Length: 393
Image 1 (cartoon, one colour):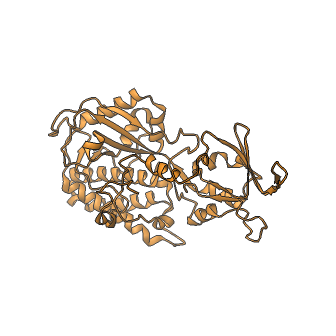
Image 2 (cartoon, rainbow, N blue to C red; image 1 turned 30 degrees about the vertical axis):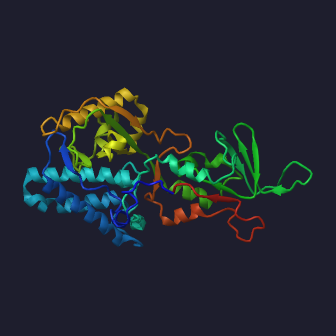
Image 3 (cartoon, one colour; image 1 turned 180 degrees about the horizontal axis):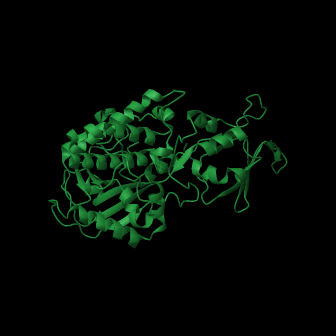
C-alpha cells in the first residue's frame, strides 16, 4: 500500500533477528559526562542478554527458582560479581551500572515499573517477531487512514464514548420489521446501538479500572480474575527537537548510564528529584532530512507516570540538564542547545490508562487466553459471540 519507506520495506531488513531490543548504543555516556569504555559496556550487556535468554529454561516449570524475572536476574548478577571485570573494583562498578541501565531498558520493553513485577516462569512465552522496527513516513495515522478509505462513509463514528455494554439481553429495535438483539451499547451522549456482536478493543488498563461497571451483567469471575491478574504498565516517549545536532551523524542510540547505580541496590524512591534517571537514553530519528534533528527518549514505570504530572517546562529542564551533562567531559561536535519537547501521556489517557500489558507475578499465559475468549462462554448458546475481546493484553 506504499505506507513504508523503501529502506524499511527491504526484504533483508525484515529478516533481521533484533530480539525486540534496540541496536547496540553508538555511544554510552556516564552520568559524569564521560564516554564509557565500549568493551566494558558490551561485556555487561552480553551478560544481561545471556541471563534473559536463560529464563526460557523455566518455561513450564512448576517450581521456578524465583517468582520474578528481576529477582532471578539480580541473584545471578550477585553470583557473578566476584569474577566480574577481572575483580577490578572500578571496572566492576561500571559494569554493575550498565546492568542497572539494562534492567531499565527491559522495563520499557516489558511495559512495567520493575522486572520484579514480571513473572519468571511464563517470561519465555514472549516471542519477538523477526525484522527491524518500521516507521511510517506519513505517520502512524496513515495506516488508520488507509483502512478507513475502504469503509463506506459514516461507518466510523468519532467522539462516541461508551458508557455501558449490556449483553445476554433481548433488546428490540424500533420499526415495523423490528427484531431482537442480544447486545445493547449505550453511549455517554445517550445514543444507543443494538448489535448481535460487539468487539471490545479497549486496552487492559481501561478494563482494570472500569470492567465492573462497564459490562451489564458483570463479566464472568474467571475473566474478571484474568483482568486483575495480568499486569499493565506505563511506558512513555519524550521527543526532543534541536536546531542543530550535538551527536555525530552515524550515531543511532545515545545511552545514558548513572555510574553510581547498581541492580543490587534499591533505586531512589524520590520521584520528584530522580524520575529522569529512569530514562534509558535516546534513539536518533532517521533520516534527519525527514524528521529534523530529533531524539526520542523512553521511560517506564512510576517515573514515567510522574513525568506526566509535570508541565513541559519542568520536563524540558530535566532533559536539558541530561543532554548538557552528556557533553560536559566528552567530545561532542557542539554544545547541546535548548530543544523543544513533545511527549506521550499514556497513563493520563482515559481510554488506555497505561501503555501495554505484561504477565505479572501471580499470572500466566493462561490468563491471556481467558481474557481473549468470547462471551457467552458456552459455545452452544443460541446467541454466541456476543462480546469479543481484541484489546492489548
